[in-house]
Length: 166
Image (cartoon, rainbow, N blue to C red; front, side, top):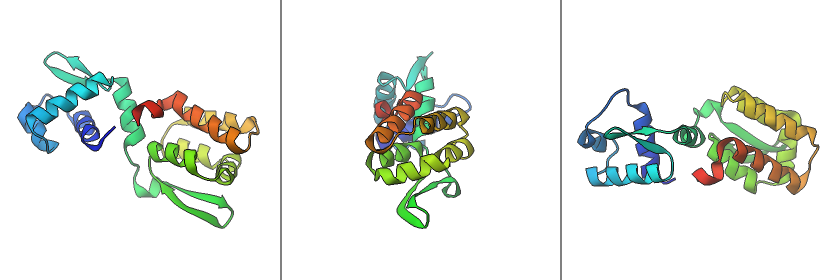
């Protein structure tokens, strides 16, 4: 999802009542025609649905916001390769988490998964105990290397359809 679409979706999620298209367009720094185009694209992607003369956010749209919206810095996650071996990778969203899992050395994935770090972060920072539980279930498989990476990505995708959002 591009930046303009994300901005439109986020602003729409923060509205408490109907708003004139021209005023909304000013809020998202787009022309009214560009805003309508973004609404149409988001609806085509299943992130919005028509509601009367306007649009409302779908469950898929709410999920996309949860995946793409950064957490406050203090709730982010610092990757390590082992004790006292920082990876110099800091994330603050599920989007970043997914991207890093795809790329980081599996040594780091093994380190964090088998210590319960991912579970704690998902439960405490993202307030998603179900996903945290499922990461704990992955730990029970005792996977290593690329099999572990594939299972973590699959678990994230099954819960948030991240591949389809990105």
